[in-house]
Length: 102
Image (cartoon, rainbow, N blue to C red):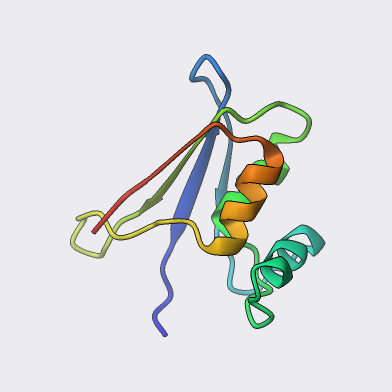
C-alpha cells in the first residue's frame, strides 16, 4: 500500500483557518480508534488528517473542513474522507466538507 500525505484544513464560519492536520503512519489517538471501530476499521488505528485537524481546533467550532492530497506530479489525488472520518465529522458538527478528487 502506498503512503499518501493528506492535509486537512479546518475553518470557522467566517472562513478563517483555525487548524491544520496531516495523516500519520506512526501516531495513534483514542478518538481515531473510536471512530475507526464504529466504522468497522479495526486495522486502521493511525491518526487521519481529518481527526488531527478537528482535535487541534480544540473547543473552536469547525464549520468547514477541506481535505487535500496531491500526487508527485502536483495533480490532485482522491482525498475523500473514510467512513470513520465521516462519522467523526458528523459527530463534531462540521457543516461542509470538501476534498480533492483525482
